Image (tube, rainbow, N blue to C red; front, side, top):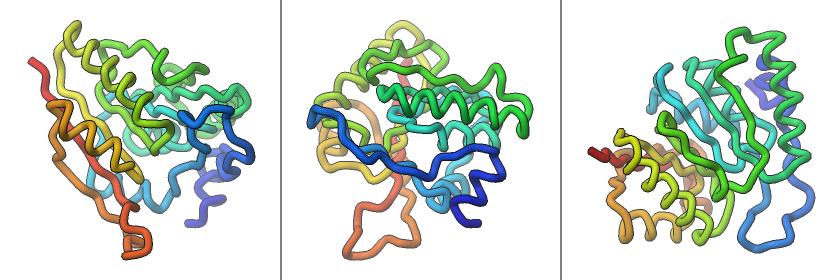
Length: 203
């Protein structure tokens, strides 16, 4: 299906990307993960209905709606841009008109990622390179602190991962790379178009 056909299926609108930029180099331009790439991820990585997924830099909510629609998981979108967060909440109303059951399982928080309070049930965290490695390390540290309060297995899913993210995870944390999901468009000119899935079991 084309991008707009997925939006029509979910009764949402997520196609536009960000025109401007936040006034700090720490926060990157928003762009939604292509639906076609999400389909590839979903073929190789099955979310569970019991998962509580957090999408950092969720924009208008494409990933939360897709995950809930396909797997019934609980999903939280965290977005610092008030306009995008407003659009995500508007999309939620449209989604609920067509796809029932998300009232208690989808929410959007308008705040900076590093300020999001990790809940004891959050166990999957998604990043489409939304901010600098300095912010990323703060978010990961928040996740690690939450594990001290409620031990559990957690996963990080990186799309288009930056080398800084990879280096930090592999040299400064106990997260282990468990799966790399390559994409059909993968080629020499765009060799970083992939998903990396890291896991940490904290007991």
